Length: 320
Image (cartoon, rainbow, N blue to C red; front, side):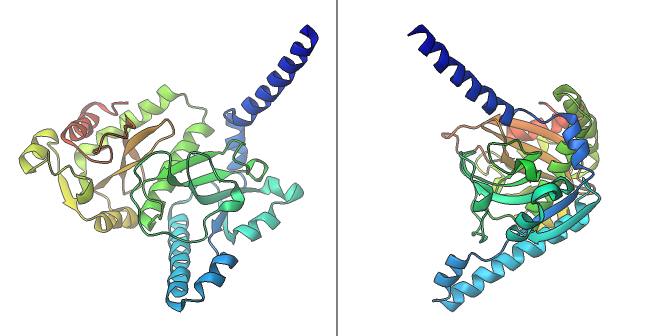
């Protein structure tokens, strides 16, 4: 019985060790190597089954094709303007990418891919093939995200170079620009092997830029029950504008010099993260994380307390 127990224990420890290795953080050298490769940016394409079904209603099929075209055009524009992690990049469908990364050729590429995911990540073969209508996320367990992976680590059980979650399942070009800014910030830190405290210091130093920029807040994210002009000015004594989401995202797209854009997105620790992005160059001027609370109806809102945090970032740097 004792020997049987030891065999079972050995098998368990072996499986556990392999799982830990698969999910272990990548070392600095992996990011340095990845930066030398060519990025394959995966474009969306029609799902044959969905196409067959939608062709029965021509209007729906036309909308489906337009959604895919819109997504791909936006992704190309965002990458062409902002992608800098690798010197070279190419745009391909998922099927084309899978053919390109076979065998020894895999070491020549990294793969930038968009996915809709829930708490259990979907395998790479289940990439989305249609852009859904905008849907504001209600929980961190469901999200749209961009992943950067090496072909050697495409399976969900393998570590990604980076994952950036988005506040909407159907990303606009502004969401894509945001994702690229955050991803490149993360990759730069990982490439240099910076510790968490060093990263926080970098963000803290960038926080000094806040007071010289105009904060553009999405009208739908303002807590109307708590905030009015007087309260906002008292909590945040710097320039601000409340506007529509699409208008604000244009500042990100055009890289407006004086614009500071807050983006609220699910984090990786069951939290919601407030990012303050300088539209001019994508500098992250502040990050503030709030624990996810399903009962808190204001978890995706900018409240008076959050504005005070933004103001504190401007004075002393990031609060966490």
